[in-house]
Length: 350
Image 1: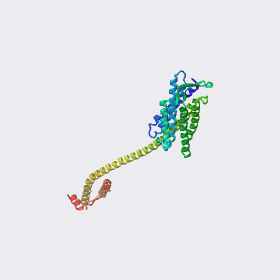
Image 2 (image 1 turned 90 degrees about the vertical axis):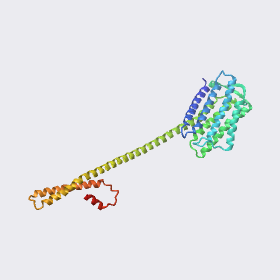
Image 3 (image 1 turned 180 degrees about the vertical axis):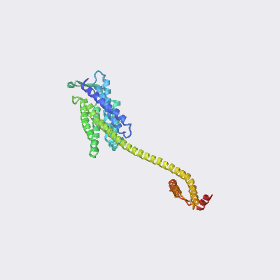
Image 4 (image 1 turned 135 degrees about the vertical axis):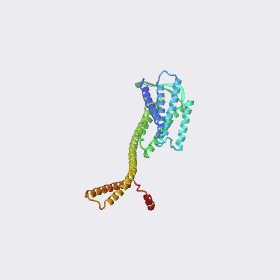
């Protein structure tokens, strides 16, 4: 395996893996912008595979011509996706470009597809470009005069994207410096690819390196956004857990208060019932004690009897106070109504 093939395989692996991850992440809510990253990385990976194709020996000239057509088409798509990215505000997926840029993108896409279908930019003959010190042999189709002009289109699109990113950076957009650095590397490598393909220089084709240079900042930014979202999610989870704990404590306190209220209400009903049942016999016991004391007037001979009767009355009165306290506890102090005393007296007489 030569150096160019190794570079192409490594670049294709990095770019296609980034495309797969970005496509998977783009399905998550709030991550639609990852679709643009997936498109850029996917086209870059495909271009790396085509570059590998053009370094293989033993294929037919027709295969190399087809590879050349695809290389021009995919290279143009890479530049178009970068123009899309450069004019897309952060957090959105649809670009906001002025009318001239929109017409330029549409025309570039049509021209690229047209050349890919007709092959007007390439001849049927294939030439080999050898780089002896790297043991690399490229198999490039010869270009037509139209192809020489068409080869400048990707470079023009790259310049448009680079200028727009520079403008956004001057306007205060953050995080664009790594993209501009990657773009500078990519632009130099694209110029090298153009010069090598058109046999102006004999050197390694560095377009594969340039593809990695522009995709790598996208992958780093993707990871950074994922980490930031994970941290925000952890903070929100902690905050939500605190709110859940607080609401749970309030619920437990309300439940305990309700249980205590029901217990006290039941105790009040019990106190009212017990007080009523005790008060009835206690009342006629006091009446009987009055009658007993009245019947003993003038016949008392022992002070012990008087003391015993006084103790009985004292105990009965204490019981009466306790019963009255229980009945007062059982009453609903919040509701009062007028009472007809005549009805109460009549009921008592009966």
